[in-house]
Image (cartoon, rainbow, N blue to C red; front, side):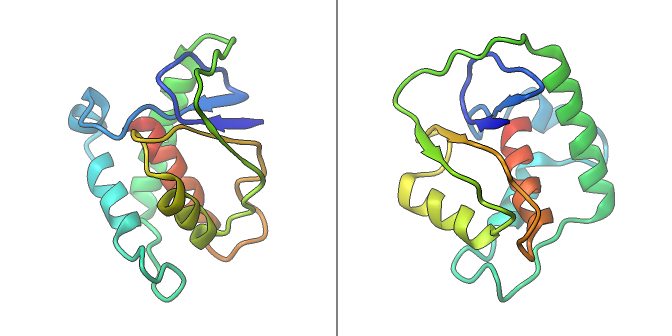
Length: 139
């Protein structure tokens, strides 16, 4: 499975995360989902992400999942990935590593990323990791 930040088509196996912008989904999404605020709260402790918990409320996570599911199911199966793209290996829920990758490589939309899988499982901040990746997709 791959997670891609890009404006191109995607499948359920490969998610494309478009630019962090004020999109219709970010403005007019579900009542309990405010994507721009969610991203801001997840990035709020960038200087020390492990010291503070930034887990979003359950209602926001559920709304985020519903919105992402709608987007992914509406997209085509074939993914064409434009260059240049940063290819990242497994992050295993290491939220601080994800933030460090983006600090070094640039945050979307300035940079495009391809994550090869294993987004969560071992890290203590798996919820934050997947929420940020999915929020960037929905934004």
